[in-house]
Image (cartoon, rainbow, N blue to C red; front, side, top):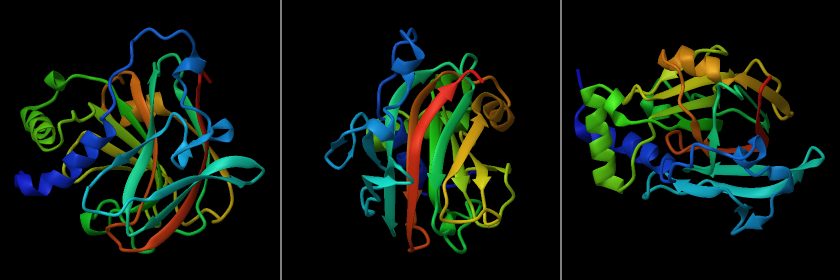
Length: 251
């Protein structure tokens, strides 16, 4: 049964916020030009790394706080969520057929007990790395095109064609793909869970090309933005996470 439009509003605002940057030209001079500004060398502008921008998901909820700090021998981003939800993102233009591998470091001191991204009421995560993709709505089924229209009417922004997240989740198995409860155009992959030792740095290397194919059953268009997020608004909890540089490579 299709959900009433009022249940779609939060997720559509989320998606439109993630997509509030214009597409970049398809021809880029080098891989370096396509990459997000590394946190390790970034200068803070209004408290966040230069080149990165805050995106608000729901205007009536508090914002997660992001700041540059020293940790583990490098400059990284610290996210502090207090019953809050927002992220920071960076515009990119990456062809996954040339550069399918994404890598980053992250550290989570504690998980959000009871969080479960298959249950809307407790759909929080201490750490998310988010990729959004270029593409036209004409490829989508009719009900998803209606979601696009609603998002544009509510926010003035277009939803991204597709969104792929890598998240920390307490109890679900690593590698599981979760489809967002309101749209098939958002997929979440469990990258870490309670089996990992907490409060230590991990380097993640993922094949975004293959993960996109596995999640959406199609070939991916270009990546248009990279983002990070910590959210605890649904569970009403407090959580901290740390993020290192995010990069793409051919292998």
